[in-house]
Image (tube, rainbow, N blue to C red; front, top):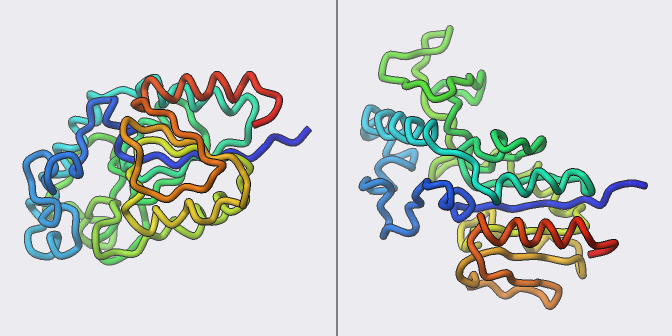
Length: 233
């Protein structure tokens, strides 16, 4: 019997339970830095060294973080469902927990690419990069992050999976950042939607939405247990 297609959309609240802070919870600051100075293409052009230093620190923090119980619970869903995780997060906690299909809308912290080209993408793990570090063609390396002011190259892939899903699970996202927020509108009509968040997102959900008011680390295992033990959703 073919597995039902289940898509999980995760936001900053998913990683917050692993100790990774979010800029939206700190008044437009991210680890004490103005978001537009370190997470926009304009910020990169104005002060690339500051941007590189900022992401070097983020990699150090990520190396010390660990997947929480929510990340781990999602892996168990693969026993019964064809699972795709679409994440707005740039960390690798879903992969480290064991999830097999993860789409990163906003890039990946552990990877870099040339300043003016999307390829090649190089995996540097938790290492640092600095001004003067280049690819084999001599082009300066930059974080493989989708900054404000840039296109979201993986959006079309995410759209494909969301528009074909049988079940949607949304965890730890306010659903106010586009284009990711628009994905919810593509879920096939009538298919079940589960939302896990400490606070109810200000979003007009359809009647088939079920809200679970918990953080990712506690709410996700509860939902996963229900989904695995039901004959239908």
